[in-house]
Length: 144
Image (cartoon, rainbow, N blue to C red):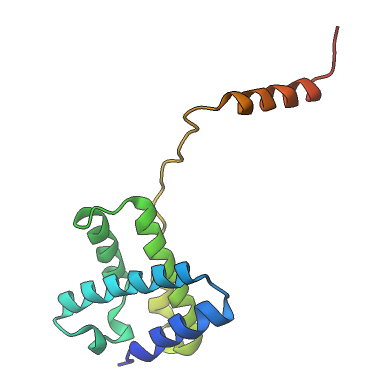
């Protein structure tokens, strides 16, 4: 079994901030994602989060975790997708460090994001409408 602690530590302390130049907010968001995932997994397997192994983080667990986020925690699909993005980023990192888990990692990477509604523009302000009309007038040739 492969302890998860050294890999998640390297990912959060080196890979994200130093190698990828991720912002503090991104690092904190990813760390929170893993905190939630590890709490979920530790309840499922009856072990402490520090005792989790990489082999225990499989596609079935990740899918159940994502369902848990939406149903029990009331998270939106956008938040669910953000948590999934953190997990997939970590799995891309781990695939080079633990090649024995490639099949398991590929299954996790294949989990699709959930479609979300794109918010429509509720209204335009008068200056925005005027700017659009000026652009249209400029683009349409004078046919008179």
